[in-house]
Length: 375
Image (cartoon, rainbow, N blue to C red; front, side, top):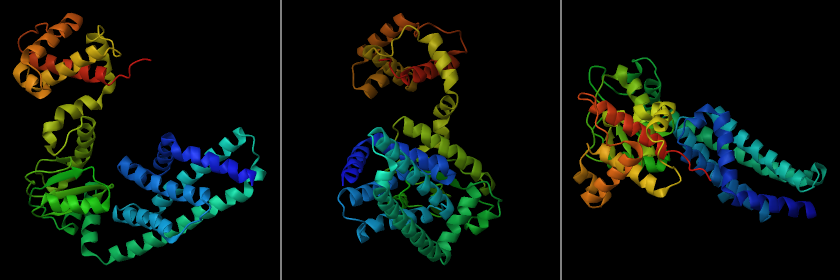
């Protein structure tokens, strides 16, 4: 049928457009707060798989098979293990489904095809979505039932309640001693299978660990020696303070990720990045005031700014800056002189204000480097 050919072309175009995936992901996260709390790459991973299954079933006229249905099983199982309620999972699924259908209809109208002409094809697509939804519900309930008989799952749920701001009595249910101090570790690992590998690699001494808001978190009395993935570790606190440390840890994790950091980082070592990221508007005002002489579209100007950031991060040491950038110290000094000529970066500051002024420069440079150059 001509209508099916039109719809197939539209789906092929949508499947090839990464913006479609991002729009569907955003629709699911907007409609369901528990889904929005998950790492965005975790949501993207599952939605990409579901879109691939449905589009392939329609485009290739192969329908859904058992392997395709297992994609829904995997999604449901992962969300149950992550502590996402079934209702929230279905809200996200329906939002994604609605976005795709609306987009198809809009594209079809633009192509001059009427809704009446597409009714059979749309019903077929809707049947695929219904089949996947039924598998989601069944797999979720099966996983939920198995977790109900697991002592570890009960401890992880108590940990979620504690880190979510629940009463300190949750600590005992999580297997924690209210008289002891614990570090709260937060990672960006959301895939339950990868989480198990990372958890084992960390070699946690005690406490409890599991997926909280879709991220692997751990509460332990002793920090691991190292980590192969990005991990933010809070200072040792009583169980009643863990919720606040967890909240700050998630914020610090975002700041660390934004800077491309890896490995194990103490929360307090990320205090400055967290503070700078908290007020982007003030950073932009500082950039306008101090870096008006720079052009965001000029690659050399960006090189100067990047060098100054590394220089400030290394305590104003040209030799350490050069080592970090793999250049000669004279190159660093030359770049800083050029930056000073454009912005006054090297102007002396009154005694006692050097640290505060360095922070203001660092904030201005970060905001400026974050600008998108005008076309």
